[in-house]
Image (cartoon, rainbow, N blue to C red):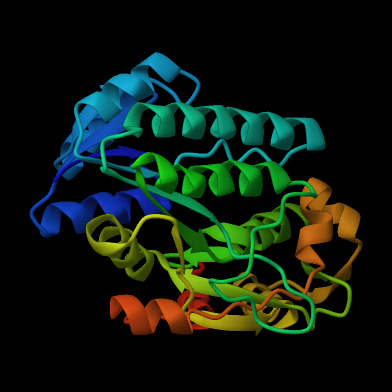
Length: 293
């Protein structure tokens, strides 16, 4: 397939582009800057200049492609307003991508987070949250899955709280950044809450499998580690950076504070059984050993 990829030069996207190219697909990658365009070209993809806010550019990308993988997100968690803007931008982009694919039977692979279910690990059958700081992302992806009734082979890969590679990425990466800035490797509450995780190279395989094989309207979990306790994550970060490890106020994490405080393990049993996918690379705690002081 000729695949249009948004977010193709990020930590996850670059792994997805490499996985697609390694398996005989070609890639048209959205590039919002000259640097991103050069990175896409160096990876073997064809760049398409534009940002997630350029809906006409997105539509032109879809028109050139046999399928779409959407990964781009502003990742601005600096304030509630900034996060709301990022969610609104992505929601409009997903709507444009989906409408352009209606009636085509072509695949659209969107991404979201794994849901939080009180008292147990979430599964692929659980609905996405539609309220809270990132509830808009849940509503947008749910709408994408609804396009299955309009001849779009839409599917969603749900990403865990940390998708990592070489000790960076995801919520664990944010903990590391905050630790460097504040001089404390912190965790919210008592730190017993669990976060699922996945290596970016393993996640990339799942995106390819979903593009190639997933039925319309389905959801999949890119989860390798069902749930590491946050205080264990902070302990590795603190040891690698030579910093004290302790509980810190939830306000430390801005608009993500309520999410960081949740116990949110997640299972990928259905995904593994149905798509024949498995974890092959380092776990999160092993990969965090790559953090450099």
